[in-house]
Length: 419
View 1: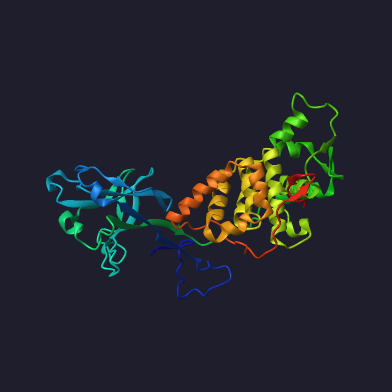
View 2 (view 1 turned 120 degrees about the vertical axis):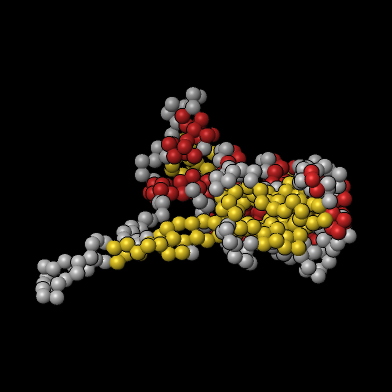
């Protein structure tokens, strides 16, 4: 961080000793200050090279690259040359570099390359700019593909017998500190701008019902809405209300196979662009109730082709995955093509501590009847768990001891419980 010049508001005037100051004399100008600030935006990436011995003989100048990672608004990648980068070194050394992997010009940064000691002794091989002053300042990468690193990072024969190799693998960590600079001046004027409130205005439009031009009957309840809002938010409503096959006098629509609280939540999202308070909507603070509402709302989102709402529901159901609801959620994910939610549910059920409890729920019976092909996929995941330790991707898991809410039998068939 450095300080810039001190600026004056105007020319200074030195008063004569013989002239007494008066109210009309020029005043000493105000002093202002500007500051030039430089700092680094730091980030790191760890790159594991498995099967290190198999990379030998790849060829001089040939590399193994990590996935790109983001630091300071730029993409970076680690490049490892198992046979070295320079022909004149005759494959005696391995080379290690970090490269700018995105478009950029004159990107200034600090770097640190570390070869991890995997013996636990923490005798890592570290080349760092962060712990010492650089005579020439941070390094400048002029364009995409520019690299910084070491052509002779480590002698190959020494590396092969070192503690850096374990189970035929290497671990490399790269830290990048992108230099960000700016000049700050005095904030002479400042006007606070409130957060966007368009959603609140539309929400009030729904609550007041002003100028509503369409009504819906859902499970015996009547809801008023605005055609233009619905058509803007849902392509299905747009086709129904303004498409070439619409009824010219359509102002009343009866919605089948949907419960009133679900449609109310759907309208709320259309106008407010957020989900309603689930406890207030369901009348209970029980976790299973909000999960059940999320399941029904997922169906509604898919029905009206509201992709963002569908993703919101998937995310919420992922956070709420639990023994007593996961089987029904898995069935919904399969029926409505929610691949990520499906994968998460399968992994959760396949865990040994969850499998037996899930199989005892009524939701699992519903799963077997509605999506029998999923049982084969579940067996594959169970087999994978036996070979590898899988960690769950969701938080907030509900213990199996909570009340099990699954499906109920009506007229000899399985249906999901009503809200």
